[in-house]
Amino acid sequence: MGGATGPAVAAVAVQQSAVPAVLTGPGRPVGAGGGAGGLGGNSGFWGNGGAGGNGGSGVVGGAGGNGGSGGLMYGNGGRGGAGAASSAPAPNGTGGNGGIGGSAGLFGGGGAGGNGGDGPHGGTGGNGGAGGRIYGPGGSGGRGGSGAVTNGPGGSGGAGGLIGDGGGGGDAGIGGGAGNIGGAGGNAQLIGNGGNGGNSSGVAIGGPGGKGGLLFGADGVHGTP
Image 1 (cartoon, helix red, strand yellow):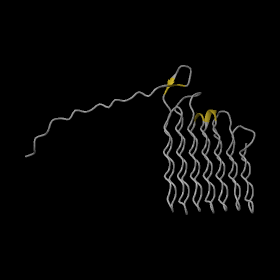
Image 2 (cartoon, one colour; image 1 turned 180 degrees about the vertical axis):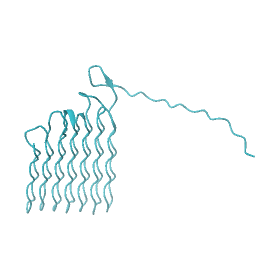
Image 3 (spheres, one colour; image 1 turned 180 degrees about the horizontal axis):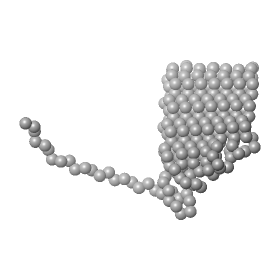
Image 4 (tube, one colour; image 1 turned 60 degrees about the vertical axis):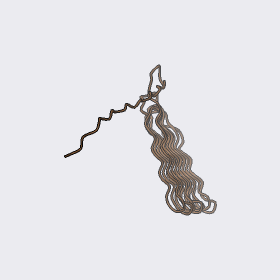
């Protein structure tokens, strides 16, 4: 025979605090901005850094979190998180910026920058992380967010290590709005090629290429307009 049941437990209601409205248009209240993505974890002696978290949605999209650093001896930097798209209709609202890629240790590649969020105004692509201090390529820059009013610019490529190519710059957003420039290519240091510049959208010049290494290496080429 089963035991007797005890008294019922009353459910406790949780008080929800109201999110204050933000006026971004002609008297039109809209929701609050999205939260930023979390940071990627740093590696210790040997291993890759963690990727940054993606931003949360909102009228102003949350920024992506930065990637974690690679291990002190060896490891690639983590990728930056993506900026969130804006939830607002044009002309209000901006996509979140992409997170910055993590830097490598002595050996390893820099993490790529996160992409900017789309929206009426596109967010900025995150910059790529630096390559390993002795050897490794820089991370590529993130793409800018596409926007119906303004496109976001691309992120810059990360610098290469003593031996290593610079990272390529990210392309600008390709929405129907006003143009913006692609990101600059990362510079090489001693031996390596400079990163190519990112492609622009609706402006007269592409992102500049990075410088080649002092001993050996070609300069990166400009991105296309």
